[in-house]
Length: 631
Image 1: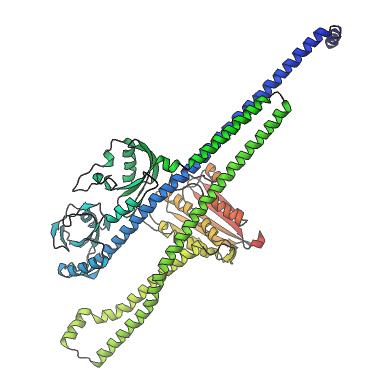
Image 2 (image 1 turned 45 degrees about the horizontal axis):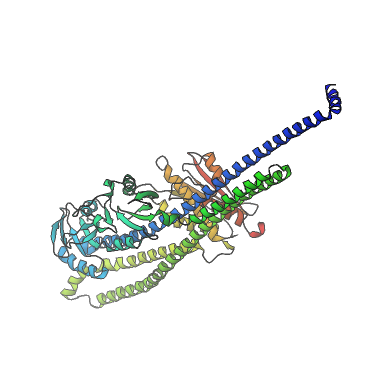
């Protein structure tokens, strides 16, 4: 009734009707503008937040990759020094176990050691140390080395590379390589064999370790004192005191030095001499030292400038879009279309970001696998040639030695009464023992060379560099080859017990697959299993179970389970995500399981699933078809 009266009144008073309609539509239009403006503002904030977050994520991923490359370069220098020290330690240990050195007769040892010095051409001198710390060296000096680190540690049974010292005989900065001489009875060493080597090789590796202008490397001993540094005034020895980095005025340098002395691996940012730099550090395996690489911040982060430029361009484009949206805010349909376009752009940006992450992961994986394949193939090739040469010649050596022994027997039969000189020589050489032990020695050497050839074959089979296409391979053999590569992680060490491998292989036919890629899947799963078991070895005895079987649906099932620390439900849900990892910096970047998932699911049309309980272990189940026809 009131509505009818209002309409009648407005017809009678058209002027008031026009004023009221104008105010009504003006209010309605302002409300719509406010609503549309609110939508534009909210959408703009969302897009900006998405763009900023995406930029930070991509920048972080790229920076982590660049830092990982610097840490890898540092590890290469560490490996060069470690390999060099390992060879020197093996040489000294071999000499210490020789019959001549174990005789402890210096009159016999000295000419033998002098000949070894000429043959090896690495050591400055060698010497024998008796348990009472008296040293006699090839320079004719007799010294007391009770205070030397190499003597103290080798008398406990260690073969070591001690901290550099200035030799009392050579007056040169050198590294003492020493090894205990086994006693005929008991466990205590009969003495110590030492060899002094110049530190030049360590200095050379450190000098060649750099990454761009302004970068340099150094090495610290167990006390945090430099043993190799571009600034020679900082280098110290027990005879020439130098300031330890542990006593530096720079608190960040002190913290990093503490990490190096504690044999940690990492890359960190610090301010050094007024400049921001990254320091990547890693410990040596063969000595109680650490290597560090100092790289100016701009050397590592310079590749990010292109990303910053792209972000600036995108920011400018976003600003232009907002200005355009603001000018068109009064046109509802255009605003709605623009909002729709902006939403699509946000989705496309998210999709592009995901594709960028996947592409980056693939590039990193491809580069790593290429480097690993080339390294494995090169090492296998270099080992295979001398191993084959030794193995082939051992057969001839066995025949020759047997012929000589047979000839010796004929001489004994034909001349049963030798001269006194020959009788004394026969007694000294113990001919009967030599005739019995020499064939055994040759047989054991043949077994050793066969073992080397088996390891080389496992390396070649694991890398599969020449099998880029799908081929029929033995899955069980691929697992065994992978276990061979990881054997050093499974065997017992002074710091942890052995990890047992329990295998239950089924009778499988040959499977059509990408052999090298499938081996990489096994490698990634087994490495994660070993890491999980190592973290739980304090409470449990480490075990990894591997089982294979063939299903009625012509599929192969590979199950790899461990009794490690297990995964939480959150970690289990994200285990196959790119760039997701629970490992510390320098040990993993979250690509292994993501790559494994892609290889199994995308390349082989199979499945990979994980089942895990915190504290009880983890089980990965991989299912792949027998042939590509089953895809």
